[in-house]
Every structure is written in C-alpha cells, then in structure tokens.
Image (tube, rainbow, N blue to C red; front, side):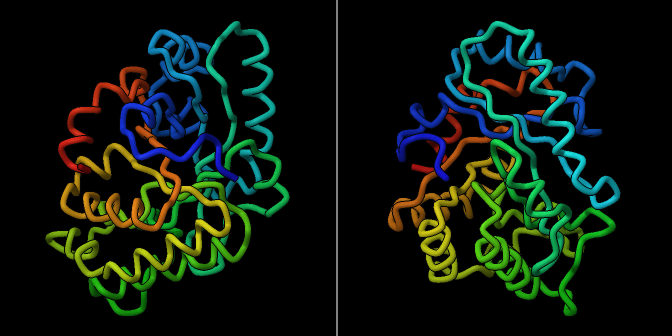
Length: 248
C-alpha cells in the first residue's frame, strides 16, 4: 500500500522519512533509540517516519518481536510525528525471503531490499558481469512483486554493495530505460512504492536522475528514505538542494 499521496515535489516528499534504523540494527549507532528518534523527527517537523530495522536469516521472523518492543517504547513517548514500525526486509535471491510472509504481514511497513550483495548469505548471479547483476536484481524484484510482500523497495537498482567491479556503476548503466519502466509499472499495479534513498541518490547521480524521470513518466509513488543510522541523518531536508540538483 502507499503511505502518502503521490508527488514529485521534493520539498513535499521530504516531509517524510521512510527508512530509519534503531538500535535493533547492529549497524546503527547507540544513540538511535526510539525515544530520541521520535523527538528528533518532531524537532525537524516531519509528518511521517518509518522505523525499518534489518532482518537476518539467522534470526528468522525476529523483526515481528522487535516491532512489539518498539511499540511498547513508543507508547511511553508523547509525539506528533506518525510512526510506522516496519523493517528493511531481505529478498536475498530470486524467490528467497529471510522471513515468513506472516511475519512480513504483521509489520506496519514492509521495505524490501533486493541488493545487499555484501552479505555472505546473499545469492549472486552465476556469471559475474555487470549485466548479469542487473538481470539478477530484476529477477529478485519481480519475485518480490509477485509475492505480495512489499510496500516499498529500498535503494532499488543501487550497485554500491557489489564489490566485483572497479566501478559498480557499470551495473546501473546496464539497465535499459524499458526495463526500469516495465518493473516500475508492474510494482505500481501492486501498490509498491520506490525509494529515493539518500546514499544511493548522492552516490550515483547519473542513474538516479534517469530513475526519477522514468518514475515520473510511469506515475509511480516515491518515498524518501535517508537510511539513517545516526540522529543527524533523520531530517531529509538537509539534502533537499542536492536532491533537486540531481533529480530535476
């Protein structure tokens, strides 16, 4: 489902941050406690945030119990911002999911990653070429859409976690406009949004300009996600000028 109205106005999109990690993610800083995240979001004037901790096959379905604990913490906090407690879920291969669908459906927001190739459990294509990785990512995204598990794709198409090539952007260059448009249209029919992920956009501006323009043409819903692991990354508005320079 879509969590806010469709818009291509960056200032409007930056009223929301749909990708924030708490201390339940091992990569987040100790300051990322629910109370401090919510207080910071209120101070920044955000309207909607999503808490999206990682899941791992070794802790299968663990994000469901984490959600309950975060909800207990949030009950003790006065806040204005609307908070969705979800997870950054893993589709680590074509048709391979780290959690049961019942776990996914218990979450407020299902943010699916299809490209954490740096994880030791992640499936890789049989042939190690940029084009093979592009096709593999598309295959995983298609399987996520077909499964009905997702509300949004996290840092889609991003190749920064692929360490097989001197320039990982060779992967994103190998996607055709038609492929991007086709998968976006399919996701749109399933009411799956597409993330404008801050590290991804800033790290590969050439590709994400193309991605944003194709998304507008298709009519997709974009979500802003800063992928915050520290408190000073919660407010997306600090990146607004750079987003506009790249995307427009």
